[in-house]
Length: 345
Image 1 (cartoon, rainbow, N blue to C red):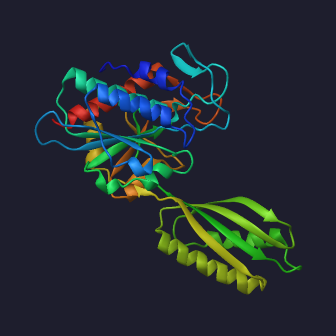
Image 2 (spheres, helix red, strand yellow):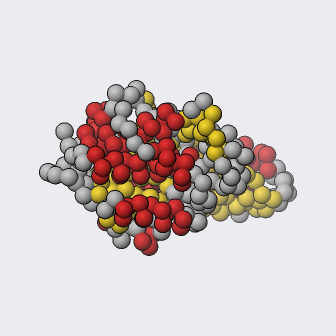
Image 3 (spheres, rainbow, N blue to C red):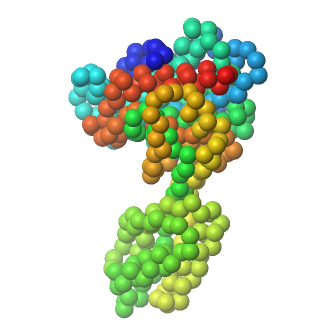
């Protein structure tokens, strides 16, 4: 396995508090490290709040790659005061989130940047992209001018599970908010049952979940529904508009709705170069993940930058039990290095 300083990087940056919108300390650290390594800080990300470090290719005409990880961490439990390494597994010392989601990805990218410079190995041009406010709704990536990145395809290091996992397909996620004025004779329970019958009749694939109710049983109220589907927003929007019309006719009350896309889905074909390169870059067992939830990969794929989501080795994210093994962190950094160097073969 390629040896890197991934563990040292992780232990250093894990101590930094990086809530969404408060990533400045970590950004400054990466900027200093990049300058020390003689790498270029590019201006593409400035307005989005993200950071891009460009590493020139060592020789020849080889694929231009990019790697993504997000700097912010979920902070519902607050930050912690230290880490402990017990039997090869890193955890927060005193509660709070460890932040391995996604400082594992950040550490692996930093370690790979350093390795490629110091080992003087052949590789193509690479953009190391560090995004912000991912935990607040993929905001940094949504603002990022991805068209200014010349890389052909890339990898997002931001999924739970042992290193070796990858996701090439993701559903889209929508939130449908329906405001209804109910007649006194119409119960909320009966209306909700009818509403779900209409959803089930959708001709395409759709996975739905009632998120929450507001209001009283026999009055105006709002229903929010979480919808995961591979369908394009146009087709889904048309069907939901028809559903609203049906409800209005049935309850003889006012119904209005708004469809909000939280993140778009994506799909990479099995023979895509990103998947082919992954397969030839490692001997570790690979497995395809089936995950719910969105990452920066959803946004970048939609922006025309094919992005394969990779497992970054952490477990129990967004809980006080979040952890990452030394082995997974080392393997992740080695995999990133190998992806860079195997692309020249």
